[in-house]
Amino acid sequence: MRLIVEEGYHRGVEYQLASGLAVLGRGEECTLQLFDESVSRQHARLLVGEQAARVEDLNSRNRTLLNGVPVSRAELLDGDRLSLGSVRFVVVLPPFRARAVSEEGATAAVDAETQALRAPGLSMLPGLRDDELIAESPAMRAFASQLERWASGEQCLLLRGELGSGRRTWARGLHRLSPRRRGPWIVFECARVPVDQQLEELFGRVGASPGANRSGLLTQAHEGSLLLADVEHLGRAAQEGLLAFLRSTRRLRLLASCGPQEVELASSLLPELLTMLRAAELRLPALRQRGFDAILLARAFLERCGGPPRHLSQAAVERLAGYAWPGNVGELRRVVELAALRATGAQVMPEALALG
Figure (cartoon, rainbow, N blue to C red):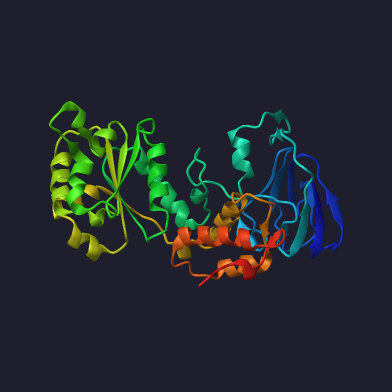
């Protein structure tokens, strides 16, 4: 790969980096030494393979920026702007082949680890690949750490967050990290099922003949996990049946998700049921509380849109970073997918972003 200095010390100078590991910084021990006071002694490292390339910040004083966004670890794409302190490079990447070089420099077959390296951000849950799990903000690091700790348990868990914040995605992530991950994952949409049908959906039906019998979701989730999505919309009869079920021996893990409003939740559920459901409780931060996670997510969504390769312009990055995202991650995904359709070139410009 090549790094061309666009701004800062030795502007216009071009550096050629071979495949493998390279450390960038002011120190004499660095692969690429940068004589600039704004650059830390060991500022960042680059891992360049034949399949992908990435950058990792080394706890630098002035941070590492990719297209104007502070990153800890991120994929590099051709044409990216990589900034270390006041030194900004243009990244020029060769066409990648189907094999990758490890940090030790040995060639290895492309596997799941390489696929994770290619993502524009890194999943906060180890071993799981899902665009919506990408995050680097302190708020999401704390949330993911708590979720990982609760994943190994068997108690009920209540996941709270705003609409569109990714409650279902993170609940499924917990299931996939849990001892019940080989069992079924079932979601019951409380708000979409009429109240007079909820009891039958959960517990099933015994018909006049064996062929008329129908198993409920609680039975279908045996040895797995059942998510009660929007649990505040669960009717009284279903609540009473669920409460009786929770008092008995059960062979599944029950999860529930709801909005952030405590008053609405307390007024909707039986007190004893609410107490049992919130044996463990997690609060998912809204996207506006997650700093530059919006940019990491936007890049991931854009990469999955298909069609010709596109990337966000610096102006688009600034527009996305300055938006409040009332619809959270769900709104961001829709905006990016529409922008990919409206973009007329390799760059997504601000005018392609349909923001309120």
